[in-house]
Length: 318
Image (cartoon, rainbow, N blue to C red; front, side, top):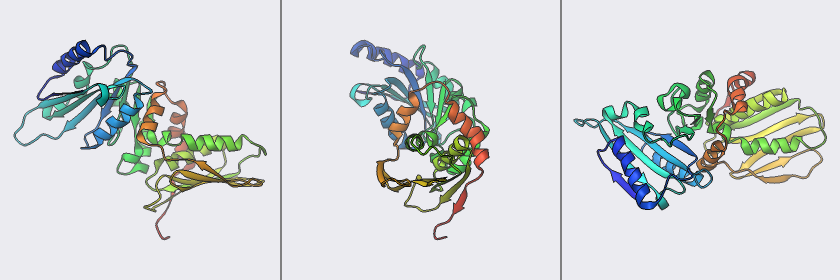
């Protein structure tokens, strides 16, 4: 069910929610958190809502989409709202707030009356994010703050900004996308021979902040000389591969197909492993599994990047 509330107020939206609850049952029953999605990009709000709806099957929640819009010529402040429940909202309930003019200036006041009582708040910026999420009005009220460096105009520069302004509770999908890579390498290194890694090489695309974070994490964990090389190949996004050097030979994990990686180890047959790029739904559901600060991410973003230094950039055809 979708209920449109044009030219409305937050109070009227809250009353409409109560009415829907009375007519259709306790739709807020079992909600475990409030997810605030902040987006001003047309079309991206629907993509983010779809990801939240899918993630809500694992994490029932109330979703509040804050979508400030530029003022139209000659128009005053206005708030249009939309409420989605039932089949149109997965296992969540979705409130979309599109604000114009002065109505968009105080985003915190837009959502305060709509937060679930006594439930944690997570704020997610799927596209443009503030330089300091922890001091942003919608970031201050949240236990977790999720950004996506890969969605910024300059993903590598975005990592530096995140590092400079990190606050416990911050998270970024560039780190979340590393989960499968980290798990595969941990499994490989947990097998004999138990030799020290003497050198690490990580490669990926120039628009992949995950590649840089991967190198930083490996540098912190292994303490070996680590190089990070980025390429401008337009057809190969994300992490391309990693090579670990040990006395017995090199371990190579290379993603040469979109969802499949090849593992090569000395004295072992070559293996093909499922290693798909994680979509928005997977990343969001993963981050919502924990509402306490991710201390390892905090260490990597604040200290690991300095240890590994700036990545080398190889231009196409070089």
